[in-house]
Image (cartoon, rainbow, N blue to C red):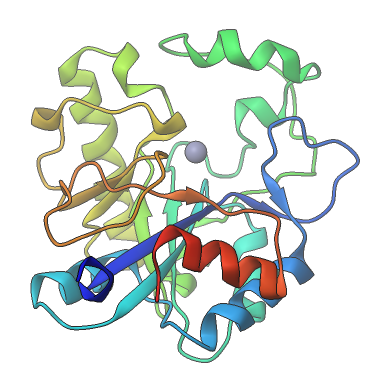
Length: 249
Ligand SMILES: [Zn+2]
């Protein structure tokens, strides 16, 4: 029975909170997140992506959930980590270019400009930090890495497919080297910025990579195209039914 085969479900989060505006649907309320972690804890382990893949490789039975955060905003350590249940582990994908500066989209006065800029090979947006979107510092990532997995989200968060292959490789390699230096841990996984895939030949040194396409992860799922589900704003029984409807049991 397909239902009994080991598999995992990877959830994708970006930010926690309730801002006045959220045009890209990036926020989940912190208390809703806490409730979701509690619901999951009653049925499935929350493991890092690397640990989930290891379980599939070893043919360990059972289903698992991985909880991933892209962009490594400071909310991860301030709001998400304190709301985890015991033994739940996050996977947090961080960029390494000027982490003391906010991402360019967080400094944009008009978010409607974002789609065109995303397609640019190197979007340049002037403007100071708004103060609303701080990112984790190297020291904060080092603390996080003691209990959670830190993954590569590339150096500058460019759309990799807009870049020549050698630059794709450089974006990935630079971030991995810095993250490994900052955290003192190996960094084996990647999440593609904007979900835009890179050439597989640019991924040397990576063991796996997450997309933003929905689906479950099986033993045979291509490791550089791991699917993820955008976390829905559901809680309690509704959230549980949603997880089961994707195939977890
Ligand atoms: Zn991102």
